[in-house]
Image 1 (tube, one colour):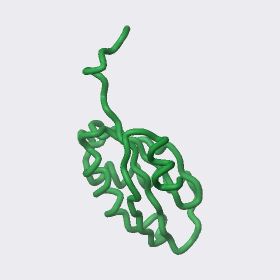
Image 2 (image 1 turned 45 degrees about the vertical axis):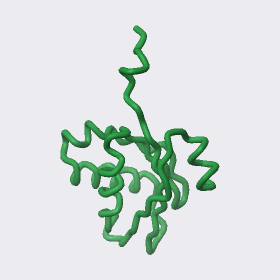
Image 3 (image 1 turned 60 degrees about the horizontal axis):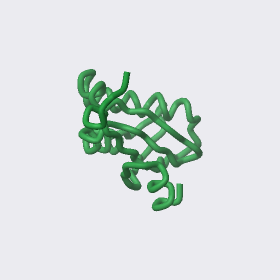
Length: 108
């Protein structure tokens, strides 16, 4: 079954940087990012955003989401303040429609 280009869901990629007091394992970061987006958007908003952590290495990551929900996902990320009682701050570095552009512009 072929999907017409007009019926495809457009995605955007958000580059992020996590600052924390201690090193946090990638699996905890991934879980807590999804959790904070779910808490901020609710179940329906989460399903519309359809976030997916594409890459996370040390303190830099990339999240894919629906083009219409980018600002909401960015807001949920900024509001994340703790992971396992460790204070954190998540900053968005940029948004792009392709991974290549995001990696070249932001040196990820």
